[in-house]
Image (tube, rainbow, N blue to C red; front, side):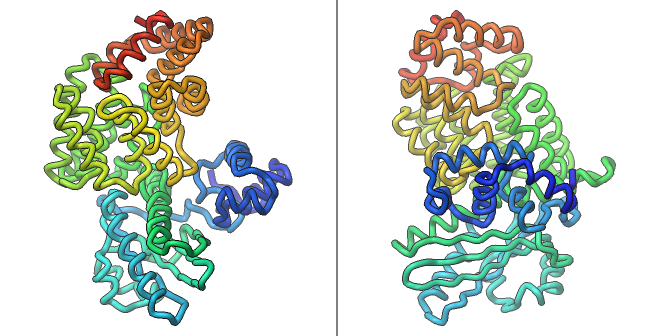
Length: 476
C-alpha cells in the first residue's frame, strides 16, 4: 500500500518521541552504537526500539523505514523485462585530492561490483567497463541503453585522518529517478578491514530476498497483469513465499520457481533457490515422500551448479544433500565452497551455520557464523532466528534458544519442534507438551525422525541431544 505524505505523518504519530528519534537516526545511517551514544541508551535498547518501530509502521526493511523520513518510495520502480535486471556500478567519486583515497574509492567500487555479481543473483556490468566509459550518472542514458542496464548505483566518498563518509545511491537507469539512498560514516582504523566492512554492508542491503533490488522488483511485478509475467518476475514472487517457511508458502514457492524455470531453464539462481525449497519440503514433512523431495532437491542442485559453478546458495544446499547420502566428506567440501563464494552474504552464512551445528562440524563453529550473519544483516528476517535457535539448542544453550525461536516463524514445524525440545531440556515438560500437541495437530506429516532424515542431522552430539529431548517432550 502506498502512503501519501499525510498518511505517513499520521502513521509516524504512532511513534513515541524516543522511538521517532531512534527511527530518524537509524534511517539516516547511524549504527546501534552511535544511536545509543547520542541518546544515552544501550545498543540492545536501540534494537528493541527498532523492533517496535517496524511493527508500528508496518515496514520490513531499512529502506522502507528511510522512505518515511526521506520522502522516497521504493514503489517508484522501473518495469522489469523477462530477464533479471542489470546493474551498473559507477566508480565511486572521491572528493579528496589525495591519491590514496582515490585508490581506496576504486578498490571499494571494484569489490562491490565483484561481490554483488557473485552473491546478489543479478548481472553486474564489469568494473573495468564502467571505468573505461568515463561518464557521469547524469550522462549515462545512451551507454546504459547500449549495455541493457536497468539500475545504476553511484557514490561519493569523503575522508580525513579520522573518518570516512560514503554516500551510495540506486537509481532507475531509464529515467534517473532515485530509488534508494544510504549514508555510511565509519572511523578510520585498519583501512583494509574498513573496506571489507563497507563492502559487506552494501552487499547485504542490495542482495537477497529482503534486499533493495528484490523489494523494488517485487513492487513493479505486482503492478503487472498476470499474463505478462516473465521468468524473473516469478522468481521474485517465489522468493517472498519461500522465506515464510510455512507449508503453503513453500508449496507456492516451488510452484513459482518451477514456472520461472519453465520460461528460462538456464536461470541458475532459480534452480538453486528451488533446491533450497525442496530441502525445506524434505525436512519439514511438507511433501508426500521424503525420498522424492530429496531427489527433486538433488536434480535442482545439479542443474544450478552445471549452469553456475560459483553459486553459493547451490553449494549451501549441497552441504546437506551430500549428508543425506552419507557423504560427509563431500558435505565438508561443499561447505568450504559455499563459504568461499558466500562469505559476505548473511543468508548464506545463516544456512552454513545451521549445517555446521547439525550436519558437519559442531555448534562451537556454528555460533560465530550466525553471529556474523546477524552483524551483516542487523534487521534479520525471522528465519535467521529459527536457525539461531536450533544452533543454540545444539550448543546446550536452551534458554537462549527459546528466545531466538520465539522471534522466528510460528508456521514452521521445525521451529515448533526445537521450541518443544528446548523446553523439555530445561525440565519444563508442561510447556513442551503443549507445543508438541500443537505440532502434532497442525503438522501431521512432520516427525522428529523425518526432520533428522531430511535435514539431515548427522552430527552425533546434536543427534543425541535431539532424540533425548524428543523423548522428554513425547515427540518420539
